[in-house]
Image 1 (cartoon, rainbow, N blue to C red):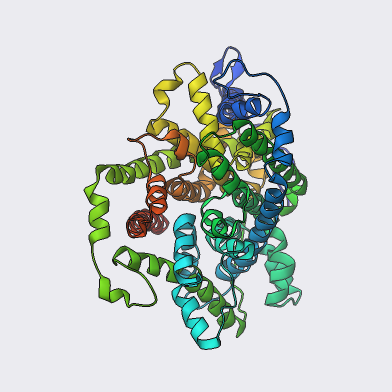
Image 2 (cartoon, rainbow, N blue to C red; image 1 turned 180 degrees about the horizontal axis):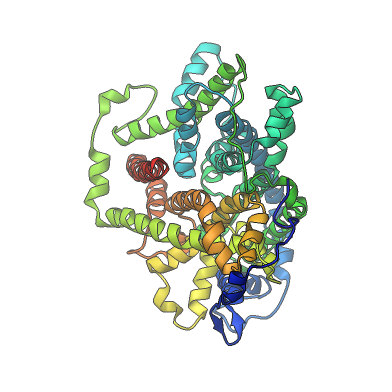
Length: 587
C-alpha cells in the first residue's frame, strides 16, 4: 500500500501557487507550536517539582524546614536503615507490589481480550461490570472483604462450618495483594480494552486466511499488540501498590505487617513528634526506584511503531468464536465480578442500613436509617460530600486536558524536551499520597501567597490532580501510539503546523480516550483522600478523610453510609457518561 510519505509528488497547479501560505500566531518571533510546548513543559514541571523539592531538601536537613537552624546532613538515611526497620518494610512492599501487579494483569488482560474481541454471552453486561471494582474506594473494598472473608466474615463462617477450616488468610500479604488487585484490575482492563477497540483487525484477518484458529490469533496476534497498554498499566499499578494505604492499614496493622504507606502513616500522622527527615528520605528512595521503572518502561516501548495498528484505512474487528470455551470464560468473569466486587458492595450497602452486621444475626432484624441520619445531621459530613464532588468535576476537566496536550507533546512533536514532558507526567506515580500532602503543605507555606491557598479546595484539587495525572496520561498515550504518523504527515502536506494537526486531526481521533481519561480521573479524585490529610481544613474535608475519621472511631455504620453515597454518585456520573457517549454514537 502506498502511503503519503512515499507517494509520488505532483506538480502544483496554478491555483495552488496563488494561495497564500497560512500564517500562524507568533509570540516574540516564536511559533505557536513552540509556545504551547514550552508552556506545557513549564506547567507540568512546576506541578511535579512543587511537592518534590521540599521533600528532597528535607531529607538532607537535620531539622524541619521551618527551623532555620537546621544543617545539611545524611543522618536521616542512616537512621532510616539502622533504627526505623525500613529494610523489612522495603521487602514487604516489594512482595506486595509485585504480587498485586501480577494478579491484576492476570485478571485484566484475559478479560479485556475476551470481552472486546470474542463472542461472549451477555458481553455488554460483562464489559460494564468489569469496570465497577475501580469505582469503589479501596478503603471500602477492604472493609467489604473483611465483612465477607475476614476471620469472622459471613462467607468465612459458612466455610468453617462446612469444611472445618478457612482456606485463606485475609490478614497476610497475599490477602492484601488479592484485594488490591480486584480494585486495580479495571485500570489495566480499560487500557487494554481501549487499545483493542481502536486497533485495526487486518492482521487478524491475515492470520485467519493463513488458517490460524481463534486461540492462536489471540495469543500470537492480539496479545503481542497489547504491549504498550500492558506496560503502562503495569508501571501505574506497581506504583499505586507501593503507595496505597487503605488495604495495608486494614489488613496489615492487626498482624504487624508494615509496608511503605503504613510506615509513613504511623511515623508521620500517628506520631506525636514526626521525624520529617526519615519520612523525606524514605520517600526519596521510593522516588528513585519508581524513576528507574519509568526508564525501563521507555526502553521497552522504544520501538513504538511496531505496535501501530490504526492507519488511514482500517477494517472493523471481527469477534472470534471460542466455541464452548466462551461459556467457561463467562463463568470466570462472573466469579470475579460477583465475589470480588458485587458481594462486598452488597454487604457494604446492607451494613449502611443496619445497626449491627454480623453472621450471628440476620441483617433484616436490625434494619435502620440511623446511619444516614447521622451523616445528614452533621454539616461537616454534608460538606465533605459536596467538596468531593466539586473537586472531582473540576479536576477531571483540568487534569484530562493537561494530560491530552502533554501526551501529544511527548509522543507527536519534535520538541527537544518531549521526553522530559513524558517523564514529568509519569513522575507523580513515585509520590505517595501522604507525601504529596506533606510536600504541598510545605510548598504552600514557603511560596509567596501560598497561605491563601493552604486549607482550601484549590489546594486539594492541585494535590489530587497531581496524583491523577499519570492515570490520565497513561489512559490517553496508548491510544495515540496506535494512530499512525502518516495522518500527521497528511495534515502537514496541506500546510498545517503542529497545533493545526492536533486541533484538526488528532484531537478528534482521541475523543474516546479523552472521555475515558475524564471518567478515570473523576473516579480517582472522588476516591482520593490521603493527600487531603495534610492539606484539608474543617471546610475542605472530603469523603475519604471523613470516612477514615469515623472508621478510627469505630463508627462503621456511618462509614458504610458515606460509602454507599459515594457509590451512588459514581453510578450516576458513569451512567450519564455512558448515555451521552451512546447518543453521540447514534447521532
